[in-house]
Image 1 (cartoon, one colour):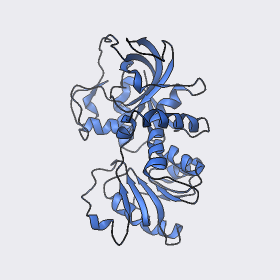
Image 2 (cartoon, one colour):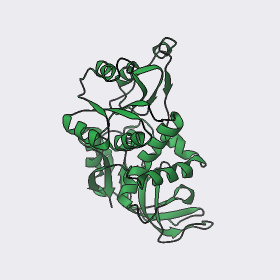
Image 3 (cartoon, helix red, strand yellow):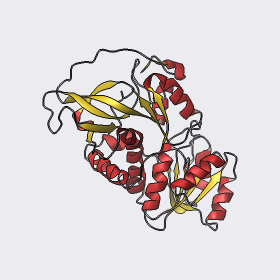
Length: 319
């Protein structure tokens, strides 16, 4: 599936490319499952531009079927997964630098790896690097029934935190509670600030993770206690309006982070360590729930459903 331009899902079209030879340092992976993420939508609409035509997708899992010169540590037939750049996962098979591959243990399914690797790296970044979450922390996690939310809630609970989630419907709230959320604020029109204040005895949360964007960031700041932190990690609801520095401090004394998992995973030292941590917690059951599977040729529908908020958990494309 390739992008023929920027815009709506109609810019995604099925096509055929002959497999290129596997160059030095590269391997060819035959995909068993491909993850669908909001960054794929951001690429399609041009928020993060790609050279057109482009094959989107930043996450997949499969089997090595060819190896280029100079590659060590991998063999044809190895089970592998990867996340982040380079883009190009929406394909039956692709060439990718061997350094981006993570060996996939036999006890972790391809589907789980493709659904969880990028979101797991994001959670690792948010819960251990952006802020070190520990016992007693109170977190506000937006979109707690989503693919990233399912991992964030479980991982934060594993670290001993209390988690307040948000969800757009009672059905999604029940899902978030099933992941372990302690409380869920329901509805896009809910008085979020008042409800969070009530749930925290007026104190506010220690840490808010906001992937909603739009005007939600202002509310996220208002839900967070003095000397707390807000991590802004996306804009599913649209662009974030300009924010004056005075909205953060000095009276509020807040910290605002804008971390990128793509930058996090681009660090060649951090990436393998963080991926190992993700695999470790996956074995403890901290995985993204799979909310839908689509044939690769139906990538338009997968992105449309994700963009419209019709889904829960992670979405997969299956070649």
